[in-house]
Every structure is written in C-alpha cells, then in structure tokens.
Length: 125
Image (cartoon, rainbow, N blue to C red; front, top):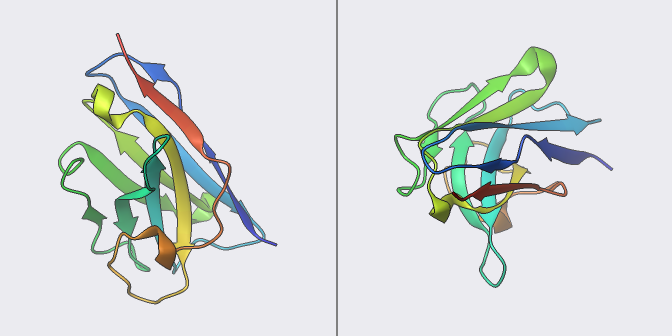
C-alpha cells in the first residue's frame, strides 16, 4: 500500500525557517491534490496548505498564509512546504496526505488519505 514519508522537521528558533518534504513510494504525486496538515497532542489534525492537480490554486490556512508556501517537484515525486517566520504556535507534527477527490479545495483531513509517520517541527528559543 502506498504511504507518504514526511521529513525536514527540526527544532528552530522563532522567526526561523524550515522546508518540509513529502514523498511517496508506489504513488505518483503529480496530477493529484496534496495537502499538508499538522497536529498537536490533544487537538484535532488541522489543514495547513493544499496544492491542486496542476499546481494551480494553492490554498492556505489563515494562520499560515503569507508565511508558508506549498510547491511540487513532479520529477522528484515530492511536495514541499516552505515555512518562514515560524512562531511557537507552529509547533506540531506535520503530515501530508493525498485526496482522492479531484479538485477538492477543503483542508479537512477526513478528505485525505495515505498519511505518513509525520515530522516534528518545534519552534522554541
């Protein structure tokens, strides 16, 4: 079964930057809706960013718009999340998922599949 692998998480100071990567074995990521999500203990998984099938119409949660950028490199079968100006509120485990619903714009985790193990992002001084 296809599964995502997220990487790039780290401990970073407030104001710092990180780039997360999402790859998948046995599953092409091109021409698919891919989303990034995050979760902290005791809270529900929340949507962060989404990229459409043709890399058009990226969508961001209000809390990250202007700071985070989602992109795709189809040649490397990888989707990235560039995170700038990080704050402690961005601390979470970050996951990527694929939606089986073409064109979906919702950033709700129940509409996405193939979660990986996640990558920990910690923003602290």
